[in-house]
Amino acid sequence: MPMISAMTDLSAAMYSGAEPPYYCQKCPRLFDFLEDCRDRLPGHFNGPVSSFGDPKAELLVVGLAPGIHGANKTGRPFTGDAAGDLLYPALAKFGFSNDRFEARIDDGLALNRAMITNAVRCVPPQNKPVGAEVNSCRDYLRAQIDVLPTLKVLLCLGKVSHDSTVRCLGGKVAQQKFGHGSEYELGGFTVLSSYHCSRYNTNTGRLTEAMFFDVFARAKTLLN
Image 1 (spheres, rainbow, N blue to C red):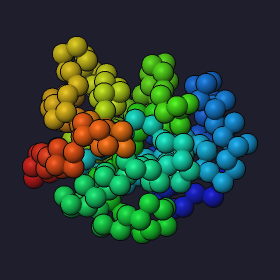
Image 2: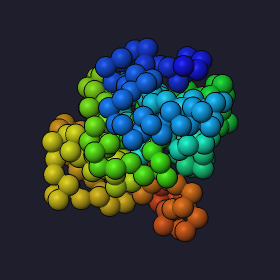
Image 3: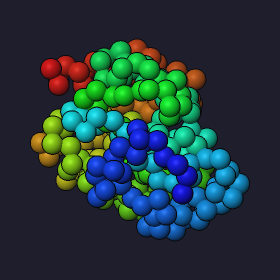
Image 4: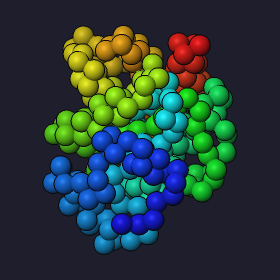
């Protein structure tokens, strides 16, 4: 197991029930893929990526899964790929970080009142987890929610994240449908959703910076 910084190990150290073990075998396909990554990419983290942020978080950002050369490489959510280049500036703009993001785990970045996690903690082949893997990893999402005593708002990035979060909170995806800017009250929390801040969505114009910032502005309003 590679060395993990104090920042990326925050949740694993404090919330052991909310984080899978490094050699998690709940999803055979993902376990086999990570074993292959360890052989091919020995300098990468190559394990389930722990949540990152403030243990007193009021906002939980729920992404999809680690990118193979992003979080799967660095061991910190949304660090090392294009999605983080939009997410972390948004967090800084609305006061949820100390604005020290430099896409590396020793950049001194810290989150304030916010935490980031993923619906699936392990990198999937072609960045596409299957339904059984999303379902299997939902226990960790539920546990993460349960150990954040001040949590109020969940911000879901993309439909997979939205649907898993809705199910996690006892909702029905047919009733609480995904949409950019959608907002629902579930299980005592507000669930907001946005198109995922992936390079594909930003390059095609499906998601603009203004659209993304609008969702964060709504989250900040709800928390205030």
